[in-house]
Length: 325
Image (cartoon, rainbow, N blue to C red):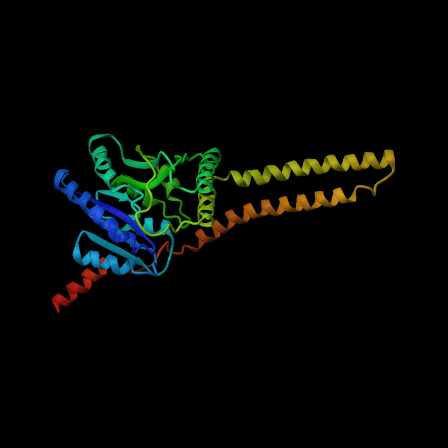
């Protein structure tokens, strides 16, 4: 009996990249099916696209039964698309891959070979270089990995991509973590399992434009920090204690100064600056607490991570109903 592999491909407004991806991926699929005897299906996840992405998915599904798709009712984000794909994947092996070909499909046969021949539960990828990426973006990414690895017990590999291949038992473990606020890079590391890392040089997008602005990357990094570390809360507490001690010291200084020089009024500009600074730090610490509180609030609502509007399975069911009629 042949093993089955499901390749999850999140898509948001990727009408230009989708046909290019399918063309390249089909070559890899045919080679793997012939040489490695593995059945492969592509599971495209339309994250509420507003262009022809969904139409192209439907065309691919009609042309090639190995191409399945899920479509959201609106844009829920890449993390929701990854979770939806994993939830609906039926393969013994499950892969995650970007549609823009920045995750080289030609690595997939080697990833599958490793899981077949070596004692690993997952094969993940990371970039060895960031050639072609804007310098400011590279700097911010490097800084994020260094920072989160210092404050979190869950180590996240620098340059890690979402591109990976997992055995079913690891996929089931990831599905156990059904939290609303998701950071997949951290989740994959938190569940454990033996992972082998493959490095590759940075690849430019095949078509279209990236959907990750600096602001979105910053918000995504906050998701990772608040999801896998409580160090910022501890920092807020430490800052509060430090400034409380400083205030007592300053009170003593003012008392001594008044008793010795008898001039309690002078120095009010510096006092005003200190008040502004302390107030700003208080608001900053309150903001940290508020960030964690907001995540807790969203978790307690128990809202669905995604809502499906359409899928290839529904099309099959409608087709069978028509045939029976």
